[in-house]
Image (cartoon, rainbow, N blue to C red; front, top):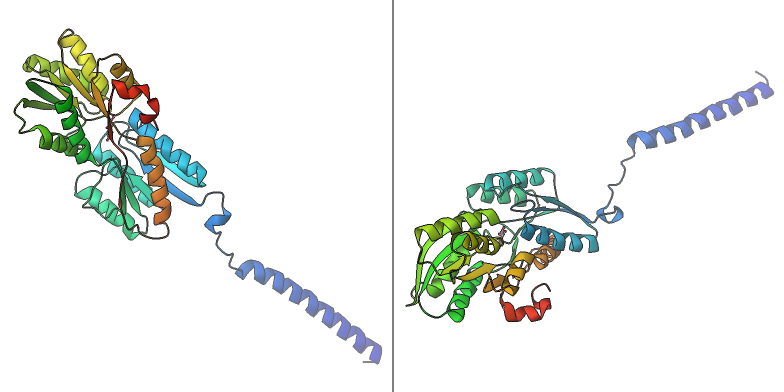
Length: 329
Ligand code: BGC
């Protein structure tokens, strides 16, 4: 082989080697390179939270949702709202389980009674998905925090409102949302603590409204038929007030009955203005939604030192409605 051919061979060899090397680098990079995981801060949303409510279209839960959505928007959080069509603990637990399976960064949920709920909270926390209970606490679970009304204290407010705004003997019937809801039982407990041994108060019966206005109307109707001496009606959930007014209108329109409601939905406020409801206990559901999202954000980093985050409660009567800001802050 002469010198020229040797040189050509070396050049050709080098070119082949060079092309193969480049090819190997490109192919190898594509095949073996491990793409670095997308950091949450680089995506549009920082976290993905779920809010599991008691009942989908209930006006009270819509206010919680509104507050939570606003806080989520302000903090670049994606919020998923799910709820049973009609209040039902089994349905709620199923939704909670589904949210755990979808690997949320945190779940805000109404606390419900029973082992199933506690087991689900345990499962969630084991998977590093913190749980915050809202509106109703479930203290015996491993939830990381509770945001909402102190329900026993709120029940005491009902008791005080009855004593402060009535004179003479009170024959009382209680209309409650659902007996299996912890917050409803706590409100009744608080109410009874204040009035049970009071010499002019007699509690005659307690009936459920199933957290609907219609349910409260029916319950009132039946109660008044059974106990015509009733002269005070106490409601412990948001639609009970308007339902009790409707029920009284049907069964004894001219009877002077003291009506004490819960919450400040627009219809309740209107009925206070019209002197058809004497007083109501205000809760602040929008604030609950906001506070719950903010607590959940903190929980992404570490546990909270104070984990019972109570929102305000307050008795509202007609004279308070002159300054509306107190009702809907
Ligand atoms: C309660 C909620 C309930 C709602 C029903 C509120 O007073 O806090 O637990 O779902 O009433 O309308």
